Image (cartoon, rainbow, N blue to C red; front, side, top):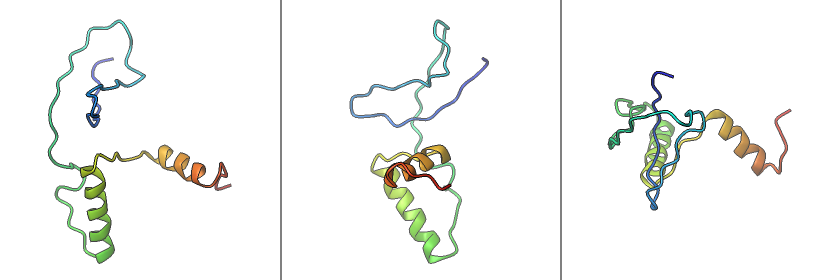
Length: 88
């Protein structure tokens, strides 16, 4: 393993959880850097009202401590809300 980069929100207890694929027993260097902007949307300018609403909702979610879900996490959440039913 040469390098691993990940981002996380700092919880109120300040305990950070490292990725599971980080090998145990190796020397690592961890640098904490505050990220002040959302690199995905910092230059994005929505052209429609629904785009502006979606961007505002995203920013409010992140500002409130929410996290963004991966596609797998979104699928799992949809299944959970459907009582375990899948799309198939």
